Length: 539
Image 1: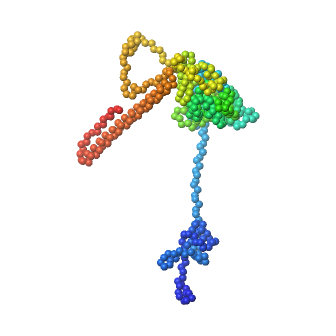
Image 2: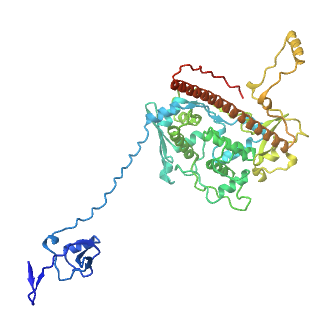
Image 3: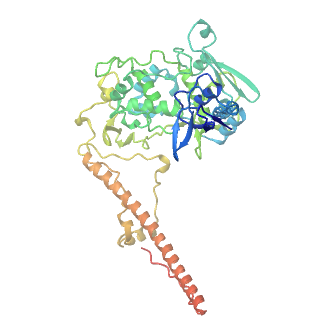
């Protein structure tokens, strides 16, 4: 339909504007639901018209109203983002008594190591070692030589539970500073910390909580500088860096007997701090002038022992070692004997520490009635001193803790007799008695020249293990030994390379034969030479 203007001319009715989504109109009315929804979506309504064959944009007047169809259009609201479902991993169940017992029984039970008191007496350091251990609170540990029983030890550790108190007080003292519970067979037992202290002769001092020894500030580093050469790093520093023979033996007793470690060549925080507690009366301050405070709230020795039992129990269940072993049974036997538990099963005796201490480079040998002791001056530089020598080993003098001695006190092969290597009695060779016929044959064979050795084996010489003139000679022998190891390693690589070359030659010849067969089949001939593989000469 059209309409007429005042002049009577006919004018076409305007078409309703088309809605498009684009930029919002500046003159758009507010308050309408559709406009509000569109505005929330960040879109606007625009109109378009065509004039003179060209597309033009025009703003819609404020007086225009939306049609009923447009008013009913509702823009859908944005859906909220879906929350990802976080699947919580189920907590691992604690191992049962049967699992602990199975793991412990699968481990190898070794003898508990104890110090050799006769050897310490011959070295002249028994009183010093005993004094430091007594100050720590482990004075009776050296004399308590007990065997171990595998089945009883496994049952004790598998069922061990600890009830401890965090603070001291009359109630806690009356309760025995806490207790442990365990099961042997079908019987349930409870032993207080005080009873454990009575079984070992530990002093009833300190806290009963299962807390580690703790040193604050740089006390630990200062203590290591007072004992050993080089800087300290837990699990990396070597026990051989401790210079004093008495303190080095104390560390070996702590790591080997009290803590039951199989690997005692490296030093950890607990061992250094226990040595520090034993030296606190002898060394109230460090060389730098700093006061040595130590741990004023240290736990009792019974608490430290129980904490070590719990650590071994956890390690036994979580370790992935191919052939694990433990040697702590000798410290469980006194507890069971103190409360009257009947010990049965496989009995494993105790064992004295390496009586000759050759394996850990503690002693080098004997010079008459004296022992040659090895100690570290700097990194990989060692010296030897002859013991017994009370002037050097007595810890009553402050300088002997650091074990700084002059060069004229070193072992000198030019002045002293040669060092005789110490060998175990079972390794000593028995004297052989030859018959007259064997002696005549021996005389005849001495004139024969030795058989020549060819190849790289002629460079593999036995290391010299006799007395050295000085440190330079010892360092030269050590470097020569490293060079021989490098040559052996190269020989192994050459053998592997020769085997690889042989297999490669065989593969190449086999591929050549296959190519010839393929060519013959393509030509229609069947004459193919058989495969011949010649073994490659060894390199």
